[in-house]
Image (tube, rainbow, N blue to C red; front, side, top):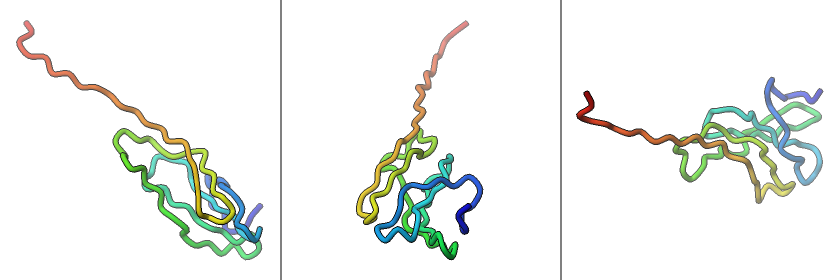
Length: 91
């Protein structure tokens, strides 16, 4: 068990010095908050809030991976789009 992790959080990668983990909660909340958690002390700080460029229909971010230097990251984005049709004059 890593101190400082909250229920439902998942690791996204180690920091370059190996002392901290990037963690996030893969859920429907956007922007997705990513924290850097010191594995020895449990101290956590907000590293980044990830918001898709086009949030329309987004359901959540998952599969987040952060490079050790924190300069790059990648993730899966769930998106549900629908069409709405208006029909007039039906009897």
